[in-house]
Length: 171
Image (cartoon, rainbow, N blue to C red; front, side, top):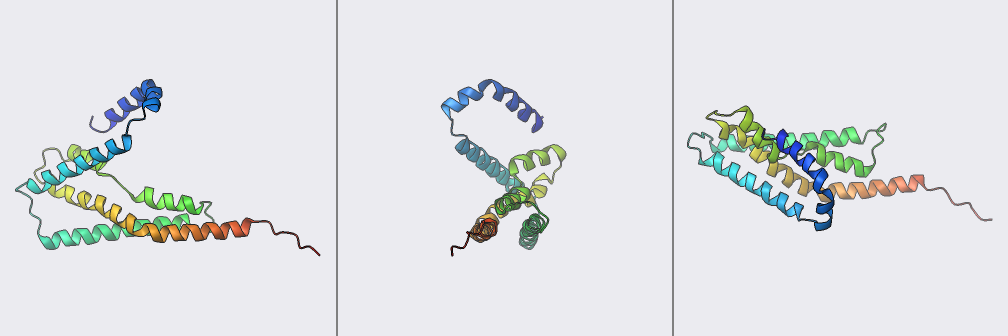
């Protein structure tokens, strides 16, 4: 009811108001960012306002380390698989695969946690890794953009050079 029904209703309503939306062009990007920010804020508030949360600093540091390690491992593995010799992915495809396949959002994760663990007194403790994972993926992504961009540009240049037909030599 929390995740699937709104998606279905949105798809049905979209059929009827698609033309109107294309004419009016509402600021969906801004609205989406504000809603995501509100979800993150309310989840943080719910998590750390709970008096039953028993999370010491060392455990929190370990969780952060594990999440950063998992995120980096996922990004590295997707890079390796998408750049294999028999892969037909372009450098731009590889960048999309790295960022899209490893990133998860709080907008789906938090409602799922609330559904699966409804009534569980330690729900706030369970949501801590997800609260760390979301900012970690944003931070790591922003740190890796220059490196991945330079790799993609150099790779695209190399592919263009190998695909260009050689000009005939004039005698």
